[in-house]
Length: 299
Image (cartoon, rainbow, N blue to C red; front, top):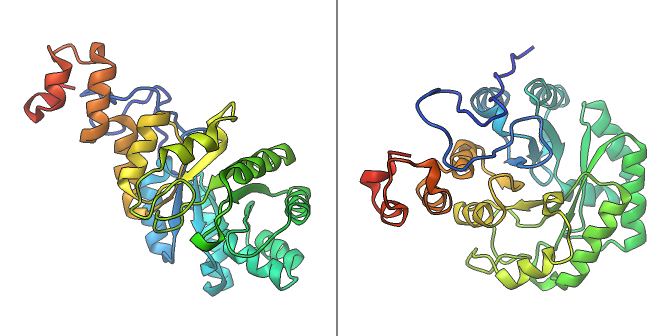
């Protein structure tokens, strides 16, 4: 049994360099948490790579998604061991929604759930990013997943630009899924982070689309934003704070994302300097310091 990493202190203190400094952006939640979730996309990590990832960053990882249909190619014992390994470090591993879509299209939904349970998975995702799925079928699928004892993540948004649906429809789907009892709703961003839902073709965020999506939500922490690109992660952190839920994070970006979350990278450090100057007593002029790397280290 792998040994779990030591959890970070709930007050946000750093593991190493203890006593040297505090995170410039305060309030980052420690595990176990329901906000500030990070979902990593796994396109085929071996067991040793998975163990290395978890030893390094388990306390910063909440979910590991076995991307699209990649879990179909694992030897069954290896897949079971990966799922067990993730759980031993306090993480949840689950199959991508596209794999479920294939199972549904081929009439193998119950077999899909049985196999997920047999390899130790406790979480599944429902999506209709590629196949058409009417509202009643989606509701039935979610209900059956929940009845089988799974934690359910749903995903909204289409993968291909030609299939794009109005933001108002996506918002209604979010509300319906939450009423049924899904844990969180994932906003489609794909692996590329371009040309879907809130993202323009160049990967930048369409602020109007984002605003329409969250306008009626009382609590945006019900959403997990797929945000594979650094600028997307940064913009969402600056908008919603360090405990925004982010997904489709590359394994090699886990610590870099955490640094963004707590203000240990330049752009979010700048935001911390400007919004909370009282946390930086040796910086006389936060606006000046925000653009001066010689002063930034005083934070």
